[in-house]
Image 1 (cartoon, rainbow, N blue to C red):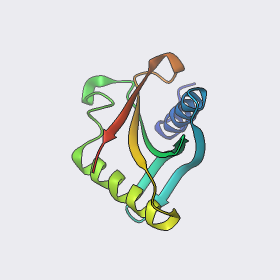
Image 2 (image 1 turned 120 degrees about the vertical axis):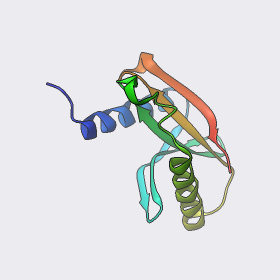
Image 3 (image 1 turned 60 degrees about the vertical axis):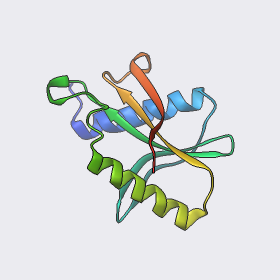
Image 4 (image 1 turned 45 degrees about the horizontal axis):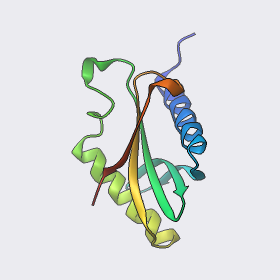
Length: 117
């Protein structure tokens, strides 16, 4: 049975969370929504809060997973992260990306500081 785009995205987020947990991060929140957009995962890496954008691209016909994080998408992520910090307290943070071309742990690329303000 083929996964729908929505189910594939949720599976990718779960894989990303597992991957990051295995690398010592702690899950703070999944799928944070506000008026500016959504952040897939919010993790804690020591004293640093990490906002994580998860991108799965099983077909590169329309570009890679990294290419799908357009300048417009980056702006939405930044504004959403700023909103979260305003609501929950300012702290050291970064925005990472988890990129996948297949939904399994062997096909994960983790980019630290993928987006900066």
